[in-house]
Image 1 (tube, rainbow, N blue to C red):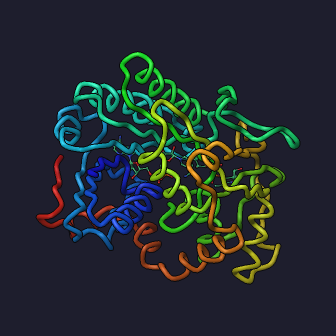
Image 2 (image 1 turned 90 degrees about the horizontal axis):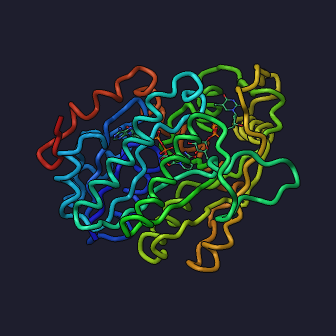
Length: 340
Ligand code: NAD
Ligand code: DAU
């Protein structure tokens, strides 16, 4: 199989590329990434010389480039997005550009290139916010996005479904809960808190810290996407979750405990605007239809993740100094096309 992965230099995309190249030594992967602040080619250092891997520096809005790349692939796996809720609250434009217009551009080109198989990576946030005691989100939950980020992702999901119904484009969608693990940009809760302690800073807990997220190790997300691409039913949506609901304070205490710090390192700060109370995902459909369920327990996954950040100080330093943005210039060789 030849895959066009968009956004493969980000957190989940880079883990997915590692997963595919390791699990399917015959598969070929083309990674199209614009290298925004969230794109980091150091995440792919281990595979950069693999002859089955090619990096292309470019934007999903660049139609000519996308047309050229899509021509000889079997499937498009679409991760590229602006992904951070706090940034979407400060400035929403780039979220609409990439998440909505960028997805539409890919769909249009996939349609015009012989109706390519298209898998869209989405989020549980499109379903809105749950109260304690509400049933978890599932494939039939109605959409109720509440941040500019989730509204842009909801819009992209609708566009993907519209291309299935209108043009018979062979699509699937997955809506996943909060991921954690190696290579996550240190702006998201878990890596931000781990790296803040490493750097001697306090942990800014929004509001009371009672908001709940459902945590899934990124490896398990990659396994689920792989199953959907190979065995999923065309036109269907799959909800993916970790079965590990935790309050933000539980996460904070766990990180403090693992890193041997005490509660005086917590600082309560004003709440996020429109802060969704709770997310939880019912993954029974993908469990019964595709025999997928999480394999990494939160206890093991969070320990391994803390260790990973402690053992990858250079990766972190390069982000903090901005050096990671020059990585491609220093390391790209003739196996890695750099266009644009
Ligand atoms: P990320 O922010 O770490 O990575 C996004 C990647 O997309 C970066 O490499 C960036 O350079 C690239 N990109 C951005 N705009 C682009 C453009 N216009 N053209 C080409 N590349 C572009 O994101 P992530 O956390 O890895 O999330 C990946 C996908 O998974 C997103 O679609 C996100 O909505 C979804 N998702 C994330 C989570 C999570 O917990 N992180 C959970 C569920 C779903
Ligand atoms: O649910 C899936 C989504 O999970 C993905 O679609 C998004 O791309 C991803 O960013 C994530 O969104 P969240 O808003 O849930 O993740 P974040 O890590 O930003 O925040 C997790 C929780 O922690 C949330 O309740 C806000 C809180 N928080 C976050 C930060 C960064 C804090 O209390 N303090 C912080 O400094």
